[in-house]
Length: 446
Image (cartoon, rainbow, N blue to C red; front, side):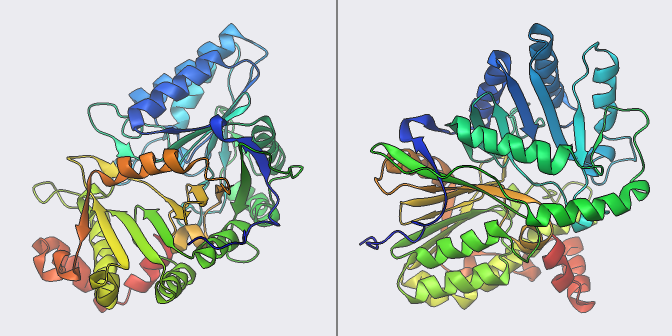
């Protein structure tokens, strides 16, 4: 039975009509909805993502933005991406000017250039990136963990599966735009990537430190509202670093609040210690826990055995070894059906889902991967939804059914491969990592 009290009753929130919360079920549907919203925008478009890629999908989105601006010159259009990620090529690819070259080319070809702001969360990409999510168009928020490129938008018959939600709420949209403008764009460390004379990272390092310090204390501002019949409560959360991280704190509260069931989605199985501890505690108090994670072949870093192997291709195997150890240590809970581990795999597609659902009343929509990197290094956000009237249960159960349709239930840890089962080059890499004790460091930054 559900707990009789609401553990988030004192959490400030915005009242939102349940009918104004839509769930999308595929990358192609997300792409269609995003482009349609851009074309129909009347007042503002704020897109925030880790990256806007220089490929067909990225160019389509940027072209749509410029067309919308041309049709309505008063439209407020701004894009925010990670500063470092925008100025390099893909991992393993030849050196290049990165996506910033595309932003500059579009701006130079237009009389009304659209700013693309590079947000430097840390002096080096490996120690922290812009992982904030949310596409705010007029009074709606399209929230997804997806970035903007071919695979996230389902080009060329491949997709990277994520979660996609559309929430119509002016106060929520205003709060998120206010954060973007005041806490990020207005800061001296943030520069327009379309400019030809943008500074070097070295030149703005003192400003980057100030930006990070400010973001670590920042939060979304809004006037709390009381729910009426037909409403759900939504609280936008933001977090950076381990200290005073409001998003991390609410994740822990969410797990502690569970009385019946927890469902966790994560693309990379590598829980921070705090989450692992709360999952263990939940199992001990009789909560049924389901973890949905991508199979190693559905990892965006996976390299098929017949392809040329690169060191980065070892990551999916590291995550699988983490999962195997977790499953082995919880074998009794798996056998008792208190713990369910489900591996997602669908043809050549990849898995990028994240989020938490507790007791069918509390949901966290987030881009947070629920791993140590997200927990302590990256700028993350999320939307905590309280649904005391069970108004969204049908929508979210439909979403979960859609997610689970391509999953396999793990009945024993022995279903997961061990090091000896891996290709020889992967075996060598895994043993080297273990020998030099690098796996602990990798777990903290990957």
